Length: 460
Image (cartoon, rainbow, N blue to C red; front, side, top):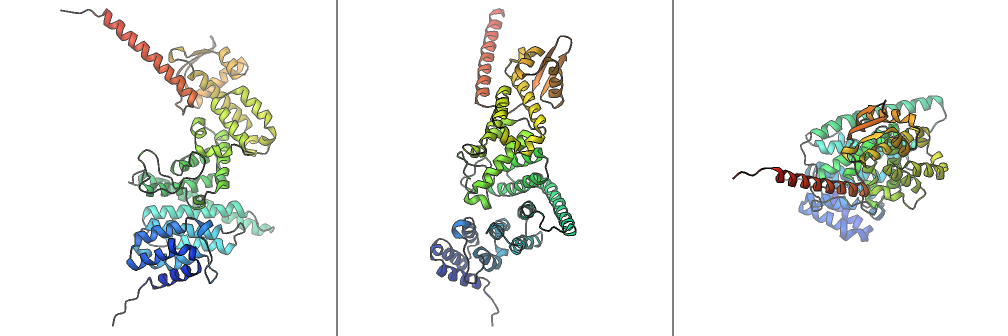
């Protein structure tokens, strides 16, 4: 007598029940899931479930038992076939189920948060030969992100000094563990032999950088947050209008642009989250030590979300720094003095921001000169930077020390000769100026060639 038990029997029963209760989701989802189970089409099954759990505002419901419908689907369907599906696909579904528990309401209970983490912890408990490296990095990153969200949102919940100390110690332990994960996974990602433009690679890198940038948002420094956030946006870009691009498919991936994977909360277009990221990125660019390539951040579509909002002043301030216009910067800081005063990062780093603008103004002044005309008098620099002449020497030395320029300074003659300028992302005006310069150089080369040909004797 056969002892075979169909592991998908419970999955089919669940899908039939949900199709009856939620008829609008029956044909596009639950009936398809049941059909794929019967036909053992595991790849198609995971794609259908992944699509279902990607739109919580439309598809997240409650079962007849009062359970989160995503969690019920995961428990009764996915776990019954978990050994038959791609580990990364299973992990992505598990993460979205966990997020549906953690973000169902703005007042998520501790039980919901614990249950969300338990889903991912159970995945990580699986053996290494079952959960492959990309899937493990993805789950670790998303689990760490849930922990960071708890740290940022819960705060201190007890007035008892003993409880507060214990809570702080627990948070410090979590942060230390997350930092270790960031470091170890960053090394693994570098060593992974995986094409950088594949969808799977983009998904894993996106999860890692999102977690890393959130960690540095909590602890700083701003330049570390800036670096991780820019890497995150490289794998999870936004559309030209600021809207989130949908998750990539194999047919939309190109070899020149990393695929978009703006997952989870952003799948349904979390405008508030994107707006806050734009604000944080502007502040990090302005205040981060060693961040001088403003052209890189100023061109990303994300920052356009700040236009026509109360935070537009921050967008204008960043664009002014791209142009390194000292007078315009002074005018903006006066106009938006109240807004700036409400941003502690700008208040505490005010002198550093002014120094950065001064250095960028010097950089632009040198860039505008032809390579044969880059010996500048201190008086010209002082006039352009709107500083006293006696401060010019310090500004030049500072520019040399942070490797924005290379060259030599003649303190007796009061001049500086620049031999190298830091490569940067250029705006449209700078590109046009550079193109014009190349045109002039091409004309000179052509004239030199003609002159040499005329002066070269010909031999019969």
